Image (cartoon, rainbow, N blue to C red; front, top):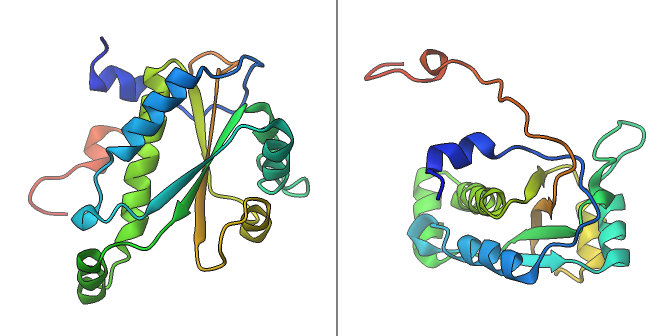
Length: 180
């Protein structure tokens, strides 16, 4: 079993996937890790739509790419797209957010995405979080109510490329103690 630090070091945004399908058991464990994600006041403001139908997945991929800007041209390669929809949160989280002028579901969805991507890495899968998307098209394709926000898309699949060495700022550049 790998340590959390080893898992965090392995996790990367994969932009090339091979044709190998993702086993149902692995997907179920990833979704269970997502279900267990913490959220503000346990609001759990999310719904995950698993898109594994080939034609639908490719239509969703088209709604996440831009030829003109060169964004996300790789999304059709991934066999599974998880569409993360922001749902209403509970009363406590809403009130706390109003008082503190924070939209806690944004943080909650970030935590959810981290759980999903780290669980995917633990299962030997690659992942990539996509924020660039045509929300209106995705909403129409998946029959998502207009009152809901499509927050993210997470690709899952077996990566084609090797693990890359991480390039990160030094710990002293990002951490301070007791003062900015």
